[in-house]
Amino acid sequence: FWHEEQNASKAQELEREATLLLFTRPSTDSQKTANNLKEAIALYKRVLEEYPRTPTAPLVQFSLGNTYLQSNEVDSAIEAYQRFTSTYASNTSLLGLVYQKLGYAFLLKKDLDQAARAYSSILDLPGAMNRDYALFEVARLEENRSKPDEALKHYQELMKTYPNSPLTSESAVRVKVIEAKKNPEPSPAASAPPKPSKP
Image 1 (tube, rainbow, N blue to C red):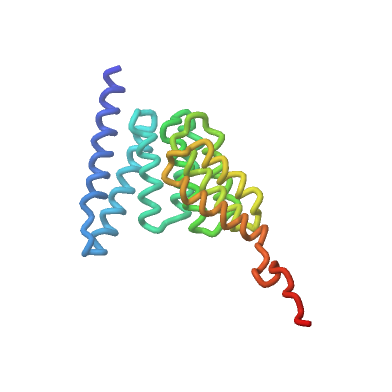
Image 2 (cartoon, rainbow, N blue to C red):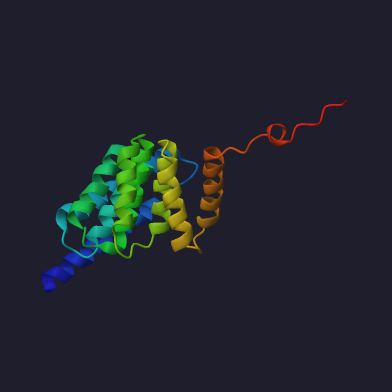
């Protein structure tokens, strides 16, 4: 038990150090920023190699993916997020956020199918806090893939299930746009009755 406590404490210390590096990145010095990101990645990896079973490890795995993403290392970010989903799937409080970031990373790679899969995984998680976000993203992807009926279904589910979501009003706008495209209104000239011809 003492040994576990020691490990947990060391893991927390390294995680704090890495997080501090991320928060103290100078916005004006790109070289220093890049160095801070590299150092943070090295610290996160060290936690996962040396203390993979500590309570801090799942958060570190998620943070590692996020830091890769900030470094524009999209493939490494995807790998880190996927490792989370296979290693720490029981951590449901973070899992929804991991899938959200994974979807975003696939979007950066223009891989719409994988992005849709990642967002859909959130919808399968009971009690995920970001289901409204996932519904919105899946709907947008379906719209981009020219599947208006699927998109409508997701937008409408979001509006019905999460009326207080900040994404509800945007969904309502998208629904109107899709329905207008599906049922274009006839132009006023076409629908006006013919004028009687003068005798």
